[in-house]
Length: 208
Image 1 (cartoon, helix red, strand yellow):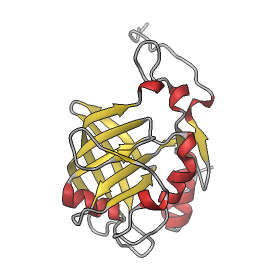
Image 2 (cartoon, rainbow, N blue to C red):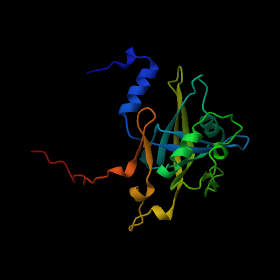
Image 3 (cartoon, rainbow, N blue to C red):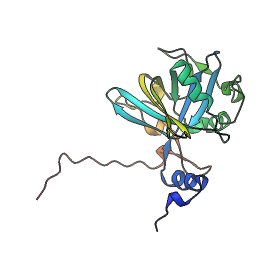
Image 4 (cartoon, rainbow, N blue to C red):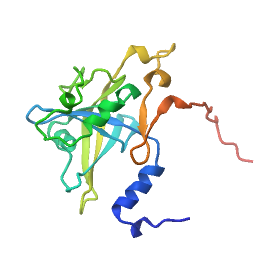
């Protein structure tokens, strides 16, 4: 069956899209306000978009009242942030950090998470996250322009922290050891490494 999204209210369209475009990686973003408060919040509208230069994209949806998320405001103001990847062991802490709290309070404190220093920027990473991407804002675009419901954030990845314990024998990240989680529909999550299979990409397409 076909479903015309233009005939649905936004909440129904949201539920359909987030239940079908799955699994979605989680960007657990730490950012710094202009006043020096460290913010931490998860976003599942997130992906790598190119490696030249290394660039990722995050969409920060507006709050129910139409106002912007603290993460978006902080990134626009201070330009640097960290994308921490979420292991299954920190799923509960990630969920706690999604709570709405005043801008002058830190979700690090709320979730009782330890901070660790980044290598090139002032924004700290989540100490127990197996991977953390240090990022610098390239472009922040309200979308849609005439009545924004989000900010689409493009950022260059400056450096990557990888906990050595999650590397395989070849020095590459092992998905089983990272044990990352991803977002599916509703309040559902999945474990990325539950069922992994390999497919070798064809060398070329031969036309007959």
